Amino acid sequence: MTGVPDGAPVAVLAGRYRLIELIGTGGMGAVWRARDELLGRDVALKQVRLDPAEVDPVLAREWTLREARIVAALHHPNIVSIFDVVVEQGVPWLVLEFLPSRSLGGVLAERGTLPPLEVAAIGADVAGALAAAHAAGIVHRDVKPDNVLLSRPSAAGPVVKLTDFGIAHTAAAPALTATHVVTGTPAYFAPETARGEGTDPRTDVYSLGATLYAAVEGRPPFGTEPGNVLALLGRIGLGGAPRPGRAGPLTDLLVQLTADDPDRRPSAEQARVALRRVADGASAAVAAPLAGTVPGDRDRAGKRGRLLGVAAAVVAVLAVAAGVLTGVVGTRADGAAPAGPAAGPPTSTAPDGAVIGDVTTADPCSLVDPGPLHAFGAASFLRDEARFAACAVSIARPDGTTATYSLTFQTQAETEDLWLGLRQEEAGYTVVSFEPADGYCDELVELPDRNVLRLAAQPQRGWTGTQDMCAIVGAARATALARLEGSGVGTRPPLTDGGPLAGIPACGLLTPADLVAVIPDVTQPQARFADWGCDWASTSGDSTVELVYYRSLPLSAYLGTRADFAGRPGLVHPAEGACWIPFVQRSYSVEGSERLETVQLTYSGPGPQAELCRAATALATAAAGRLPPPG
Image 1 (cartoon, rainbow, N blue to C red):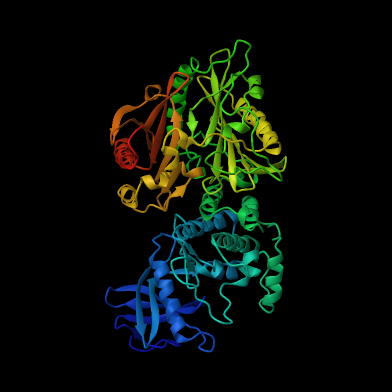
Image 2: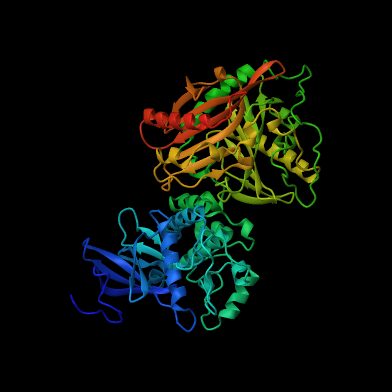
């Protein structure tokens, strides 16, 4: 082959890339299939083609190099990889991974629509790519069917790749604009983008929703109207995307993805989890309550099943703890609960919806009252025995069986199952409920400041009956909503008054080097409420690391093998698919009884338990070594 393909500016680039055929145009350039004659493989060559009357050659080159830098910073199985940048006759070209594929736009042009479960599977992969980009500080800005590539189907379904980062924005690079150039595809714009208010990760999520909407409905939410872009932008800018009529189990999730209010949309990672559940056949996950989870530190929707083994161990731990606790808290002779922490009237006010305010002093126990829970047994606060961001209550029946209720402050970003349950309005708040499972029942209450309350109940020490757990949550929810509507979220002394741990961001306890040694493709950290916890995961989602701050009973109350972590005592407790390690930061006293401030690390992933615990031990030792001396 020696000739120049039709329309190609050259036959061979850089002495090695021989152009074969034009395979697509879009964004800011044309894409050619080419042969790398040095390595003997096919590649994709992208040539930037901007009208010189609108954008000068210098800007064109900068745009190409910008895309190269952006894509080179991303390493994700659902993002097209970049191999090289070459310059031919003063024009830069990108050398990209070649995927024998068709765009989703081309498939829709031929088939019209796709089944909802197939669309959910495609969407989950695209959402995963966006989550990786957003974690790196990159906004794609042109998510649409034409930029989603689908390989030839296999037994596992098509390989899905997100491409064309030509107009992406990253905080690490200066903005590039060109006079009269409209960047992006208007039909997939978010309302705020159509109004000229800019782009951020939330606008990418809307465009993802519009893309999936088009795949099931045959058109984006507001149509296309190529002959009148201004009219189209005007309609989109007003908002109010029509509810999809053919999306089946995807319906509610598409409504959330295309919400007018950017703050009401899930993150890309939350969307990935929700879409994957639908794709896996959990059709009730969105349109009806989801199966709940056993209590895990994260309550991460994608790990609901994987944490069963860890939670079973935690149940056993709490059963021991409940026996110890009866001598510490107990109940009064008249059956009433003793005074719990911050049980008095909250000190803040809550006009137009309560907010948490100062996260360092907001008191979760101000939204909890053991009184109504006496209908289920003798209820009492579990003093200093919960996550830093939580309040817990023990409920004991005369037959010796017990249950635990907890209220935990979370952020929307860490609450990945926020978009998976049945959403209802109550007392001016959105309440998200899930189908109970394994005796565990939980609900979420969204607050206007993008924080979330998780209300959860779990049986222990022989208590059976999921219905009881949901009744406990229902009674506790009534109390929480009444207090939110009344005085709002109360305050407590800063936890740093007792020790330094509460002032140390959890995400800083592990470095990228620590994590890469265990999870080579680790994602960026996700901080929890008040920085009192942190989460990392592999890009494939099969391995996770959780780090959470707790107040707890002495180590003797828990199951596990004693170990030392950088001079701090702790435990190692293996479970199916995970290893749990608590280690001590400081010891203190509550009414003459010992309590601990602990850091609890859980590593979940594939492989033998011994390997999981070796990795968890290395991580826990690294984290412990970065804490101040025990106090």
